Image (cartoon, rainbow, N blue to C red):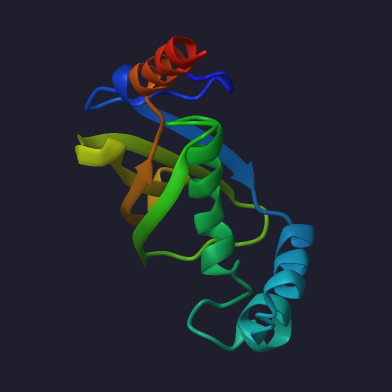
Length: 154
């Protein structure tokens, strides 16, 4: 682990998994609309949203997907990781009051300390966002080599 309690590349194994959960509130939707500028009526106007195939308001897709970011930053690989890429498909709506469970699983440990993670968000056991992320993480070996080199120079 690094000094922030995040995993280093040497700590990871394919199949490791972590979950982060968040209930999407009315406030989250309103604040996300304000911060992002996405004021689509499907998110903020119940009367309009009721006339759509969803039958009511839904959360922004990227608000839902942000729970993946929280799982990566806070759980696996955790603090110190750098989010490089995210591929995703939105497969079902998330509504105000739904609890989103983001699950990240180590799929591949690659070169240059790059790690591929399977990313899934679920509500009530049903997939709502599926995808794959690529992150870069630290190395305890590289930190030790850097310390040894600095000590040798000093």
